[in-house]
Length: 372
Image (cartoon, rainbow, N blue to C red; front, side, top):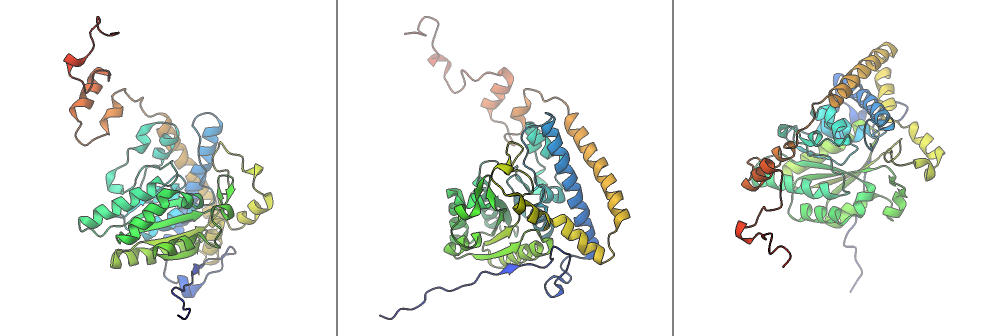
């Protein structure tokens, strides 16, 4: 029998806006209107200010461990901009920019990291899930949400975010396999920032790209410059159009970089080379977008100064709302568990006891037989 090829493919990479602000008109013309580009830049500046203040809150003991978003703002923001508001954003913990663009109140994120569960009480109309801290679990949730909407005949899809390290988790492969085989409209958005805490991507994946992992599931896949918001928007729009037309999933690998530590409990200087960090500083998505706007006379130093003042005031008000929220009551933990509270939880809330729940009173030990 002759030898023949059974599969051949290429993986494309999208890049539209270069670090120096130069722009590929053939790919990006009309993709983001000028007014929207200005609003996206203002939003990124606000998110960067929020990130800096959140870091200071942790360092001053006013908040628990916090994962900085600095350097990765373009990924989730570009996706949130490109998707419909009825589409699900299923995130991990470095997608503040996209969540805030969708409408999540900024104090919710502070409350989450302050250990206040009210930070996870999200308006269901926003189609946002709470932050997923376990690595990879949210991808299964995203597939389930999209499948449920498909079953109901709705046109919404889900977009789930995760890092390069999460692609080594079993949950990732189960979610990918499930979505591909059952044609569930989910966008798998990998934010490859080069590091899974201190483990470099080259140890997570021996292939040249993380995007190749989608090929095993017969899934459309692409790599994108994750610090280029135009490229991110184009990739997500294409994936969303494909999902709505075919009900099939897609995979996006966005190459980006976290400019800070993994979290405030980490010290990246112990495993990252300073030259590497410096090289990525030059590709900062915020600086890149500002250069683009300035070349088009859409931004200048006076607007920059005014926006900095506005961002400081906005974030200061957010911190005030988070820190001055009323003290929760003991019964609060029961109130958001179910749409209709079961009787056993009503009993727990009323008595603040669980010792006799689920038992017939006649089966409870008496004082005389307790040690029998």
